[in-house]
Image (cartoon, rainbow, N blue to C red):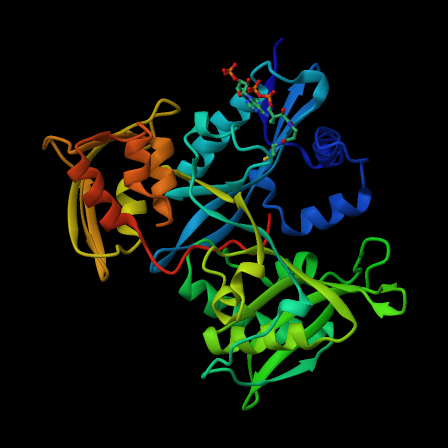
Length: 407
Ligand SMILES: CC(C)(COP(=O)(O)OP(=O)(O)OC[C@H]1O[C@@H](n2cnc3c(N)ncnc32)[C@H](O)[C@@H]1OP(=O)(O)O)[C@@H](O)C(=O)NCCC(=O)NCCS
């Protein structure tokens, strides 16, 4: 089957998004196309075409991703899908080939994505760089919170315009603290985070927008929905936290206090929360917090020297390693990395490598959460245990990375 991978013409965009909807089992939607195009970089859209018909799609957002101690231009891969009628014939592989070349050409040292299924992207050099909780859930009857000495601020219901004006600064503060958060443009806030047309599922309230303010400054916010319910005269509502962001631990604690103070609620659930979820430490009975882990961001290194110099490291260290990149060769080569909390230098070298790893695992280590020792034990990283330990100490970063929003 002959196919062609190329940037779609303006008149082909509806068809491209219709194919993407088809590949996810969704009906075509003119509204989805319109909103997607508000955020899409059109020259980063790719279609696969067979006999003049679109059968596959891919795209990439242009944003910065927070990485350990810094923020870096990143290809934010999205809209990947191949029509069920044309699967397992190499179309995704062709889309990935062209897309990775585009990302590298733009000078982005890394790419990242959310995978619909974990096994898809390793072959293209993407490694599992972040795990977090897909959901944390707590029966409110067990929500006795310990006081936080830094808890402060007052919660206030705000409208969309106020949230659009004041929340981005809190988001940027969170980005400065953790790896894994992408930069959001004004359009992103308007289209994706605080859309004009809120579409809750049946039974759920529209999103309530609550700011936490201290001395006239917004120090955090929570966006949540409520599903009202009663059982034999007892309130049995659910509260779903869509996004809770505080500029520091005290603000986070105050936001959780607010959430658990909402009456007529039986259960509170929150999605996409970090492994070091602060709520855990705030609870008198943390075992009661149900936690459901999931793999989140996958990361791909395309320019090892720039990517590795672009982040910070847990402690001072030096590592010589060899990367094997079987898909495009972008990350391949032998490198010496000298890094620490204040910066790093990484360059090609002829020295003997202490560790050898595939591009996929370099991507996995990149955001500072994956364990080099665990990958070594699993046979994914080769070399001595001492070298794996050195890589572990160098690459690990705290706090845990966090990706609050699926894109
Ligand atoms: C995932 C998807 C894009 C794959 O497209 P495709 O054109 O069939 O992929 P390819 O033919 O290029 O497959 C390349 C390789 O990946 C493997 N692969 C593809 N999809 C896979 C999956 N879901 N799970 C495991 N392996 C998969 C293929 O078996 C093939 O392996 P091989 O090289 O050893 O033969 C397509 O199945 C799809 O659209 N799925 C639904 C939407 C979706 O999940 N999109 C991804 C969003 S992140």
